[in-house]
Length: 258
Image (tube, rainbow, N blue to C red; front, side):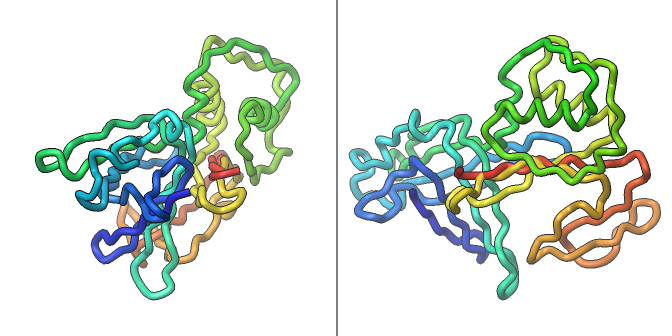
């Protein structure tokens, strides 16, 4: 497992995961750049740029001969140190789904790779199925749907709120399309909970809750009050909101590394 520390705007950034090459215990590729998008109720997508640390043996070292097939589909975590003393870290974890490289830089030295990171729930976009669920609640259907994957799911839902349905059809949809349709129909919001792929059992996971109080607080993030007409007040960081009786929360939590 590799560990790639770097400085970005005075923050320490590291990348960990299986399949990252090393030379005599030192990283053959180091963190260079990170960009991406992440929204509530959507699959995130990040692009990580890794490069060879210097020009030594660039063309013949493991950095130039990265086994992209071995790295693809592996779980990877980017860990970013937060501002302030003892403020903790921000982790972005997911599966490597695409790799571009090696790409020559500055006339051929150093070399860099671009890796695309997506959540495990993205795997649910790759199939297409038709099936009927009878006499089940939406929670039971979602449990069955996500239970077909090897990643854990954590939910905080009041099961009594959800009645059994006579039947529900997944009609020539991917598992993710069906998942989105059900959660939207029942007003269930979800997001990806990141965790460190380098820790035992740290895999990221899908979680669910019936109200904003079911969400987790995170060290290093402050609460923010939302004022009227879209005005924001309070400290920068985590956003807390109040939900009406029809609003729930299905938290998609990826467990990284199990």
